[in-house]
Amino acid sequence: MAYLDSLYEHHFIEYASYVIKERAIPQLQDGLKPVQRRILHSLFELDDGKFHKVANVVGHCMKYHPHGDQSIPDSLVVLANKDLLIEKQGNFGNIYTGDPAAAARYIECRLTPLARGVLHNPRLTQYADSYDGRNREPVVFPAKIPVLLAQGAEGIAPGMTTRILPNNLIELLEAEIAHMQDQPFQLLPDFPTAGLMDASEYNDGNGKVRVRARLDTSDPKRIVIRDIPFGVTTESLIASVEDAARKDKVKISSIHDYTAEKVEVEVKLARGVYTQEVVDALYAFTECEVSISTSLLVIDGDRPKVMSVTEVLQRNVDHLVDVLRAELKSEEIQLRDRMHAKTLEQIFIEEHIYQAIEQMKTVEQVEGAVRKGLAVHQEQIKREVTGEDLETLLKIPIRRISLYDIERARKEMQEIRQRLREIKGHLDAIIPYAIDFLQGLIGKYRDVFPRRTEVVSFARVDVREVAQRNLRLRYDKNTGYLGYEVDAQLLCEVSHYDRVLVIRKDGTYSVIDVPDKLFVDKGMLHCGLVDKDLIFNVIYRDEEDNTYLKRCQIDQFILNKVYALAPEGCKVLRLTTDSERTIALDYKPKPRVRVLQEEFAIAQYPVRGLKAGGIRLSNKELAGCKLV
Image (cartoon, rainbow, N blue to C red; front, top):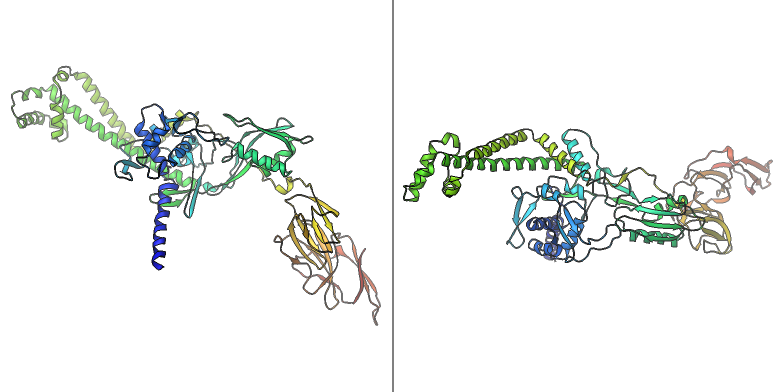
């Protein structure tokens, strides 16, 4: 058994680690999960500028993805609907209505120009063997934009979950510039479904936001929903409104969905009801307002880590600088190789070294003649001449030699030198170069990525305040039942969200939800809605015939828990909430008792805590107690 336990624990840890790193949680550097990275890698390999059938992309991606083809088209559709890296053609579903995409054989996609420009660079990408060892796939893309924050992500793995909300790409790039210039910045989510957002509890990516639909209330008899909250579809929103209407929380006559490319849901109100009376109820009881909790968990290196939006952006800036530096160095190496080849070619042709090989009969003699001719110009060459260089020179055709343009060759070499000087300047000032790069992206894509979600601050709607009190709370003193299904004396009108305070004749009390039919007691001292400011005046007597007055407020309680107003063993004589009344005590006639009646003004006594004892009014044996 111990062996099985250890085996199970070992295998479970391996399974959990695999799911966390290889399936559910995105990578910090490029913001992608493995299946998304494989899809994009397939698109880069297939890229010819034209649209590709999604089914073909799925088949190509199967070379890299070991988990079957079921998850690939779904992941591709989700990735494409973010409108960042994949351009789509055909029915990719509707993020507003929740309609699914067409089958993979009917829809097409290709990379966006943005993806080609900021994500793909084979010279810098680190590759690893695919699951079967037949192919090579990227470990992580050298992304030059904060893809993770721009797209957002959701994932569930054993013991952990992530939910990263999408941000506006232009705001992200501007924040990166601000960070490099040591200026403050703040990032707030921006949703593709637009709407209104209160981010006061966002907590830099590890809190929550409240998102509301945008309601058009210009017509007093109808409400048109123009934007919906993120994560909500018009279908689920309409279902929530209809459910609220059935429960009589919102009074409407009909609701219709005219959504196509833009959201348009029309809510017609019931007779005698106007828009301003319904707006708060829609926010309180339907999906017109939702709260979205966030948790920014990513794979950093080879470990899951919870980070803030600010930390992620700062790491993305560091990554951008590293990628730009690596690109410049890679280009510098390529230019120097090209310059070396051009220099050898120029000397080989202009100095007529090719003529020296005409009489040579062996390969060794030919190479020796070329080396001898180049050695004279070694100062100009500045690099060791390799056998590969010689092979390249000897492959130059006679036609090319005869048409060699000296001026054109010198101009090309001058351009290379100029570009090398520019690269050196960029490497020496890499931060200004990175800022220029980001500003170029902002100028190019500002109109493509406008902010859609409006950031506002709105008060929380209290459901108890907007709920309609259309339930009649009744109490039958003969049976002791309380509820809105009891046919007896009417106490008050309530809603399902109200809390009811019940004080029984023995002095115990409890706070309960509005019951349909509940036995409470055949005698009640008080029953009503909870009011924490209401003062209760309790007259009670202990076992030694001492009479007390307790004034308190019931402002703390646990739902359905039974409490006592008077100390144990005491009997409650009277209870009132009218502090202007007077207590009249009648005493039993006894020897030496001259005063047989006393009156006490309730208002003259202080209000104490709920757990405090009462103030003693008398120690005489009572004949009666009344309120006047």
